[in-house]
Image (cartoon, rainbow, N blue to C red):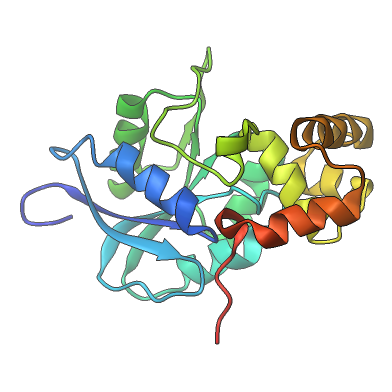
Length: 214
């Protein structure tokens, strides 16, 4: 930890919009946390941190390589997973990749901050909301301005990456029928007719642009 006793945190995801939203939320707890780095996956960690908090947006079920890379990075004390759904499959995948914290987005901001402090202190933490609250207004994700929920946005992202319904279901720990329902909801909200138009929407939206190494 820093000399002032605060936990040094790096917020990590593939999307800048997501990273900034999580950083805004955590910055409300300056007595406990020092959000000293905002990292779009692929960029270097600029300063040593106690906890790298990895938001699984767009990477649920396929986050293992990123988690493993963070766990192996010098200057990162511990890795915690921040997710809409914290279930047995995600926990097993994360543990195998080196994560020691699993924190639900359904928790209050104060509970999220407390969970991060516990991870930094060496605990293996599974922090799940008994009665999930609505997601904080500080959190953000691509497509939120077009009224997409985070889940709908995640599904759309994977559609645009060319995954089949069955592959999306496996990545998000859902059934293929549930994925089919989410796709129908997304198409209706955005006025899309097919996957080609969905891919074009994602391509043309700056919010969906992932970091691409040069």
